[in-house]
Image (cartoon, rainbow, N blue to C red; front, side, top):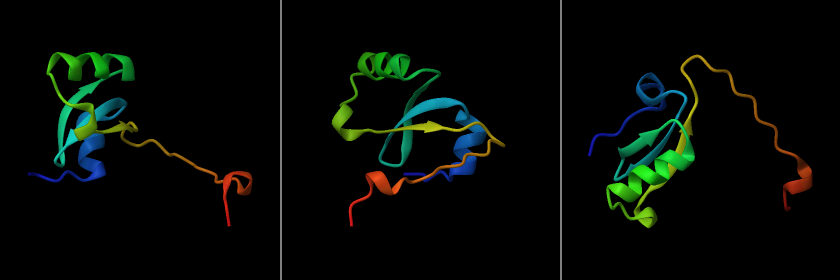
Length: 72
């Protein structure tokens, strides 16, 4: 199992959706829908996969957590 850093993922899969299994990219596609089609064709079990969107290299992402959605 080869672990990839997020920077390495951005270089190879930036702007794409990925499905990972055991730390490796099992499938990738430009849209989530086409990713599902690919993993279905490969007969991959969705329960064993982790899905993610990889932001393009150089993208700046700002996230805000609203207290409205936080429980204390």
